[in-house]
Length: 467
Ligand code: ATP
Ligand code: MG
Ligand code: MG
Ligand code: MG
Image (cartoon, rainbow, N blue to C red; front, side, top):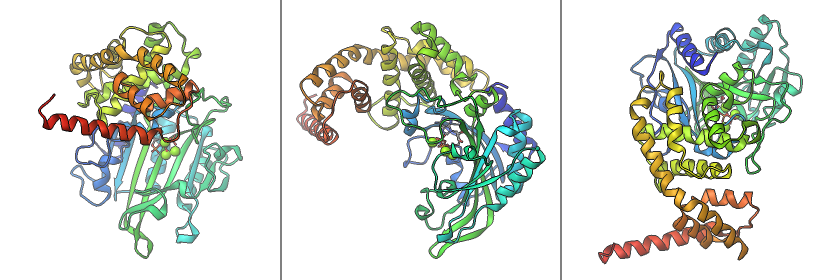
C-alpha cells in the first residue's frame, strides 16, 4: 500500500467504526499563542479532551499535518521528519481500551497488511508511589490479540529503561514501562496540571530484524532513543484519571487519543524502516538525486535533510507562513537555509528550491488540491528566500573559516554571520560542530547582547527619523 492508500484506508476504517472525519487544522494553531506549530493530532482536539462538546460528536478522526521544529536535528536518521502526518482518532467518552486497541490492530494487520509477529508493544507499568496501578487492562487486550494471531505474548517489566529497543530484545512482546508510558500535559505524573485528565499510554513498534544500527546519522544528529530495530509507529493514550490536589482519581468519563505516524506506517508496510523511501518522500529524493548528480545511498543525511526541509517549507507556505526573523517565519527560514547549505555541500550552486515545488505538489495533488492552486505563489516565496541567501552563503562560510582562524568563535562572530551573512545561529553552531571549529562558552549570551544593542540602535535611529 502507498502512503496515500494508507491514509484513505485509515479514514475509511474510522468511518466504518462510526467516526466523523474532521478537516485538518492548519499548521499554525488558530487560538493558541503558547505553541508555534500544530505538533500532533491531539493539539487541535485539546479543548474537547478537556471537556468542551465537539460539534461533530464523540467519535472523531483525521489525518493531521504536523510540524515539529524540535525534531529538526533528528532529521537525517531514517525515521524523523520535521513535517509529517499523524493519523488520529479520538473517543470523547464514547469507547475505551476494549474497542480502541482491537480496532487499531485490525487497521494495522487487516487494512495495512502488517505482519503480526513483527508488532511489539509497551504499556504503563504503574506508579506505586502515587497509587496509580499498572495498566493490566491494555496488556490483557494485547495478550488476547497476540494469542488469537498465534504469536508469543510474554510480558516483561522494564521500569524506567529508556530504549524502545529493549521491548523485544529481551524476548518479550509486551513491555511495562514507568513514566515513559504516562501521558499528561506536562509529561510526568508530577508535572500533570491539577484538574487535567491524564492516563496510561500504549505504544506500538514494528520490528526490523535486518537493521543493525541503520541510522546513517550525520555526526551532529542525536541518537534517537527509539532507534534501531524497533520503529515506533503509533501510540494510544487512555485518559482515565484526573489529577486532583490529593492525588490521582479515576474519571467517570474515559477518553482515547490515538496518534500514528503515516510516514512510518507506510514505511513498515513497505518493509523498510526508512521513511524517505515511501511514496510521499521518495519522488523528492529522486528529483534531488538528479539535480545533484549524487546517489541517495552515498549521501543519505544531506538528501534526507533537503527532502524534509523543502517539503516542510512548502506546507508552511501553503498555510501562509513567510520566511522571516521571528517565530514561525524564523523556523521556515531555518529550514530553507539549512536545505540550501546541505545542497551547497553537494555542489548545487544555482537556485533549485522552487524547482522541487512541482514534485511536492504532484505527490499531494489529490489529497491537498489547494497546493496546486497556490503553487506559483509558493514557488515565488521559496525563490525569493533562496535568492537572498544565495548571495551570502558561500561568503559566510568563507568568513566563518576566516574567523575561526582568529580564535574560538564568539558571540561577535555569530552576530556577524547572522547580521551580515544571514546565518541563523543554529546553522552557524551546527556548521562549527561539523568543521570542528571551537566556540566560546558564552557565545550565546554575547550574541544576545549584541542583538539587544542593535535593537536599541535602530530604535534610536527611529526616534531621530533616520531610516
Ligand atoms: P519518537 O519517539 O519516534 O520521536 P514520539 O513518541 O515523539 O516519536 P508521538 O508524539 O507519540 O511521537 O507521535 C505519534 C506518532 O507520530 C509516533 O508514534 C510516530 O509514528 C509519529 N512521529 C512522531 N514524530 C515523528 C517525526 N518527527 N517524523 C515522523 N513521524 C513521527
Ligand atoms: Mg519524538
Ligand atoms: Mg516515542
Ligand atoms: Mg510516542
